[in-house]
Structures are given as C-alpha cells and as structure tokens.
Length: 475
Image (tube, helix red, strand yellow):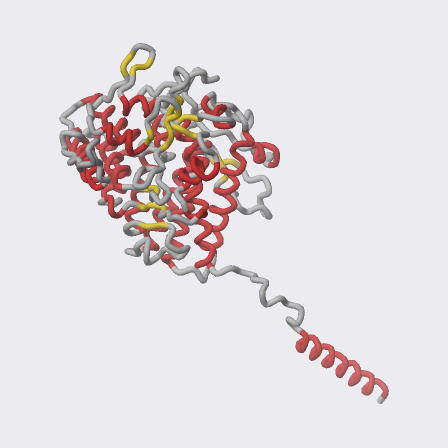
C-alpha cells in the first residue's frame, strides 16, 4: 500500500510539474525579438548592397583605374598611383558578402519566399558573386557565408565563381517569370526598369562575355534589355540618403576628391576627358576612332570643363545630378555586348556588329536631344545623326569603335574596368601620370581583413599587376 501511495504521489508530482511548465512556457519570450525576418523585408538590404557595389566606392575606384576619372585631392591622389593599401578594400568586400550575398541566401533558403522573391535574390546574388570574382580573382563561393561550418572558407577559382554566378542568375530568371521590377521591387522603389528576366539576361550576357563565350553572350543578350526605357537603374531623389551616390560623394561628402582632370597640373587629366576633348598629350592628339562631334555634348553632360579642376557635372539634368538614376544593366551595354560578341564569335558577323553599334549611335541622338541643349543665345539645339554618325568600318577598326563607344558611354560603371583587363587593354588606355606601376592594374587587392582572418587566403597574395585567370587570357 505504501508503495502504491508512493507511486501515486510521484505520478501526481510529475503531472503537476509538467502542467506548470506548460503554463509558463513562453513567459520569458520577447514578442518583439524576431527569430526570422520576413524575406520581403530582407530583399531591400540585398538591393542596397548591390547598388553600393555598382555605384559607390567600388565604382569610383574602378573608374580611376580605368582612367575615366581622376583622383584630385587627399586620399584619392594615391589612387592615381595605384597605392597598394589593402585596408581600402575591407568595406567593399564586407558589404558585398555580409549585406548582400549572405542576406540573399536567407531569402533563397527560406521556404516562405515566393518564387518571384527568390528569383530576384538569385539574380542579385549571382551578379554580386560574378562582380567580385571579376574584380578580385578567386573568391569564396561554395563555402561562403556559412561561418559556423566554414570559418575559413576556401577560395574557388575565378572561372567557377563566374559560372556559378551565371547559374544563379539563370535560376532566378526562371523563377521571376514576367515580373517587372516595379511589381516585384519588394525593397521599395529603389530599382526601376523593365522585367527582371530581361535585366537578368543582360547580366548573363555580361558574364558570358567575360568568359569569352561569345555565342552564349549573344543568346542571353538577344533576350536582354531591348530599350533604354527598360534599363535596370537605381532611382534617386532629393533626400539626403537617396541622392545619386556620385553626387553624395562629390558634393555632400568629399568635394574635389574625385574629378575628371586637374588642369592646373601637367599630365593630370583622365584619358576619357582627353578623348572627349580631343586633347593633345605629350605632343600627340588623343582622337576618337570614330569621329564624333557630339562628344562636345557628352563632355558637358559628364563634366564641368574648367581651366583648373574639371569636376563631375552634378547640375540638374547632368550625368551625376542629385536625382540622376544610375544604370545597373542597360540597353547600351546589351547592344555593345552583341556588337563585340558578333564580331568576336567563331563565325564573325561584322554586319550584325555594325548594326548593334549603330543602334547605340542612333539612340544617343534621341537621348541627347531629350537633354535639351541650348546655344549661347539660349535657343534649343537639335542634335542629328551627323553628331553621332553611324559606322561602315570593318576589321580591327570596327572592334576598336565598339570598345571605345562602350568605354565612353558606360562612364561611371564598374564594367569598363572589366573590359580593359578582359581585352588586354585593346584601346591602349594609358596609365596615370606618375603611376607606381609599369603595366595596367589587373585586379582589386584582397582586403586586409580577409588576409588577417582567413587562413585560406591564396598565397602568395596577388598584387595589382598579377593577372586573373579569366581576364588575363589572350584577347
């Protein structure tokens, strides 16, 4: 009997404890502490990271190295000499991986993400990976953004990362269907354009071109951005945190750090400035392969010409205005990819290449007419095809015209730095005056934080002039 009573007592006590646990379960949980953020909220962070990579510090460095722009003051003076300061690259690397790639992974891996939302994240993540690989060479990919399992992620080959980025973008294209950037923006109205699929195809074409896969680049670009109205762009406004990022840097933050030329010092002009101005450098004229009188309009749209510091034009309506949108992938790039790929493919098609280049030249007439240029008397100027003449060139002259048009038209974009390295500097863009290098820079430097903290960093750690495996191939 005592055993029975003892058993009942233990059973009752157990039930009581269990009941108390059920009653108090969750009492100390904070209802405001999220265990998982909705993917619709995370995508905005991915977009911001992507915009920052393509329009902020990375783009400015790339444009100085490509000699489209010039470092005119303080820390930016050292960029002209290609100063090897690895700490400069810490934020660029971390923002892309932590704020972009890692956040995109949360969306892609979340079973609650819609196909469209997952597709947008895949397109942006794939492009982030491909851009980083083109800039730095071998980078973490298969073991990236998984610190618990891989605290020292290995560096995958540049080619495999670009191919992996292409695969991600293609998977994203399949998921987004016909969704437009407006209907599937999620992160707000930061990005505008046509459909995510056509933008994704232009990005695929960009990276297939980087691999020398010309037929694949043509296939992708054929389904890419078909008009300037459908360009994938970052939208900007007048609020302090939403202004054009070049404007924020050159006007709000670091005036005269970044410019086009310092005419007060000999040899301190960017090649793009000299090209648009048809300057004479060291006794030789810097001339366009395809004579273009309309470059005078481009010069004034891009820069504020001066006898001293030539600044980026941030006036209303200009290329770097406060509210000027910034292209992430464009009709111009898509057409010029087609032009180059048609010329370079095994069954060279110069007629198609000329058509693609001439499409750009014709569209430039429409764009520059819409900008509303006026003469000295204040009368409107009508820009004609004579200002941006079409071409009938063949051979290497045609190829040079294609690459030169891309170099000029895609000012401010990272892709121009890719092109110069990918083509073995086919355009013969000169090094900066006083440069510490004797050959054109071939990559960004692995950031100091990665060198210090990741034991998988390649050794010896490559420098500026060490070619990458993909972009260092014979063109």
